[in-house]
Length: 639
Ligand code: MSP
Image (cartoon, rainbow, N blue to C red; front, side, top):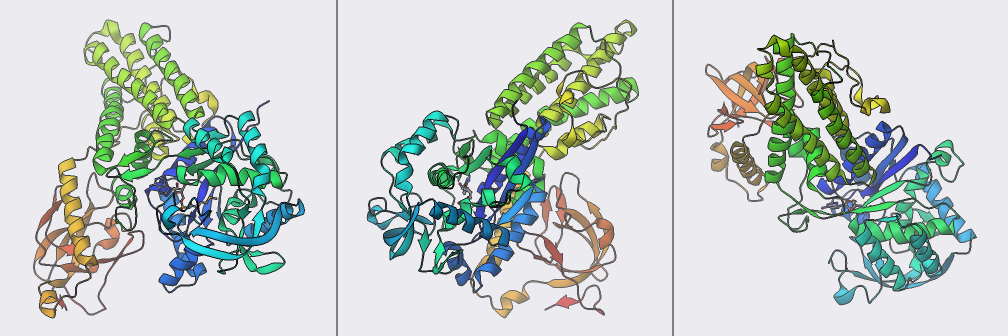
């Protein structure tokens, strides 16, 4: 019988940089796979974490005047805080600086050595710090890394080597016998030709820097960061101890990686495992890259997409949906705010959101908010039941083969059928003819039941909104722990009361207005980040004043904005502030704040703002309102 355990991993992220859209993407995909497998009855283990050793991190820390561990500690917090905001529910988070990991990585090294695969030699060659990759003279043509294009360093030092060459044949045999090991197909072929072209022994220790795991018995060497990092997939399960977790979940079912790090996972990692007599993972899946303006994102170009803004404005589910629906898993994909907003408006607000609103408002109006009992033998029932079945079969097979964009597009095909079904059957006419009452009941039931199913189908991608749909149709169950039997059409029982909520599930976004706001924000950011000094006269142009908050309320359609009425010392004004994620309106009333009183009036989400509240901004954009010392009064000038 097929084992019902599933182990999925993300790469562990370097701590020299804050999370960006690429990190978010893989982790969202892993979370979606984990949720899908749970729904299908698997016991799932989902691991993510951070890669904290190596020259790259050591250098980044030095530039910031920090110790490597201090840099790691602060960056890790950003990851740990971001994941729950995206509804990512990992089972564990491993850091390579943790004792449990170091112990396991050393055990793996010792095992490989014990099996005669590690020897001491001299390494002379090139090193790419950015990729932490050891390169041959041939690979580093013109002293540039073939993968990232950055300049490489010359290195010559004593080094431990792993007998990678010994595994060339075994690896090729393994790829042959396990066609699903490397996916997608085109990447598999690339790896196979790389291995066929000849494998050289791999340098797996360094003596020229310190930030790494010391090699047991020869502490002037630190372990090659990729050997250290790759072992996280087993050290997190307790390796080398014979733990329950290890027995249950190793070998991993799915290592998710970006295409740039496939070679490490599909060549080095299986060879290390073969050397240590450990079973090999079942699949390594390499996804493509998110591009910006059709080019690579990079810090130097300054075009790295950080997801925080979209997440704050539109919520986790919209971002998760976009990432999964827009990218063909395995290919590169361009990232743009326009594409994001178009998906939000057309797929989420129009197709899905409107169907929810229409269905529930008809049930409220025609049936007093109670879902009617259908005629399960009727034509309408059978028609929708059969569409739901087709959708379910395709959805499952696409999910099983990691074709997320297709799985979601299947659900949208079903949604479009449902929208057309309403137009065809015209429930507003049925309600006027009492002889058609049974038909109306069936129509309303099949729509509600379809929404229940649609919510379940999209729940791995959209955990928050799918639960909300269930709550709105009165199916008050926990969607995350839904039994597999709920994937059948007809589970909903007539007689349950819906929760008629007026708010739209996904409010439509005015795209023009959005870009106006973004431009305005950009201007402000540029001004603030500009390096030029300003004169005291320049500063004096800014009128900073103390004000008291008189009223505060949320702005509909925005997760971030609050509308405030403030007293500026005799003058009452309205301002809009982007602090709603942290501050509740009621906690602000009565508080003294600092505002820019002479800022040009602007509209945010269509609401007039005549000034700007000042707040400090944390690493991930979290606001901290400024408050004056006691004794300050409304209207006081801040200078
Ligand atoms: N620390 C190594 C992984 C060790 S795993 C044992 C590493 N870290 S990383 O932080 O640089 O990158 C992590 C992942 O982010 C990689 O899978 C990489 O492909 C992915 N991405 C980085 N930029 C990306 C995009 N622009 N788009 C999609 N993913 C990309 O490599």
